[in-house]
Length: 115
Length: 116
Picture 1 (tube, each protein chain N blue to C red):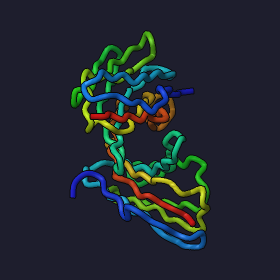
Picture 2 (picture 1 turned 30 degrees about the vertical axis):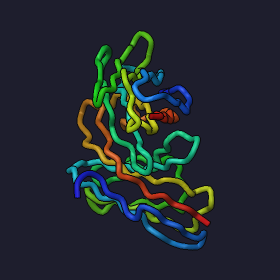
Picture 3 (picture 1 turned 90 degrees about the vertical axis):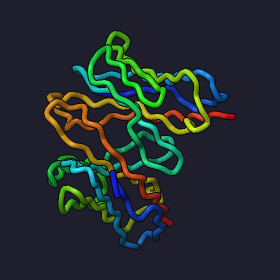
Picture 4 (picture 1 turned 180 degrees about the vertical axis):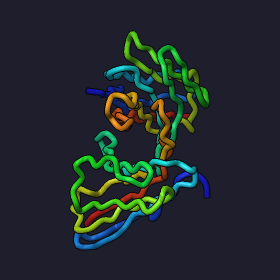
């Protein structure tokens, strides 16, 4: 596999379920990101990990819990979600360098539906 | 603060028509500018970028020029194809010394439909 992969591609869950989204990057990058993409809204950055350390958490509800066990893997653990959490969840990675302007590489996303 | 404004869609064109999608920004300092494309059912992929004023990014027949004087980064293509149907996102990355963790600031996206 190359690039950034995400599993599952589609997920339907009830509000009381617990599930996890997985992201893996095969690019040797040192930063990983979770985004939420909802219709008619800008892309929302949820979490940023740099060198496996969380460097940004944009006021995301605690029912979303990220985990970055190593520089290649990123998880998003979900529990007691709400219907408004239904969206496309995108993972991205980049190689942070000193000058900025790094390109982010995206996975195909997980389409989540919360019933 | 930093922001990106891009024209609302949807944009519908016939094959071989000329495409312009406008993007303007506000930012401190000298940001890097990007166009990403999202094909149906897929994640975003980088289309082109420019990291300093007057740079022109180009890829797959698309072009955009970083215009500092008009704070713009408009996307153009001379002759679109049906396969260009997608959603196009303009984004900026402020320089790291602006205390922003170099996160991308995104526009809302412009949907393009090209008819045969």
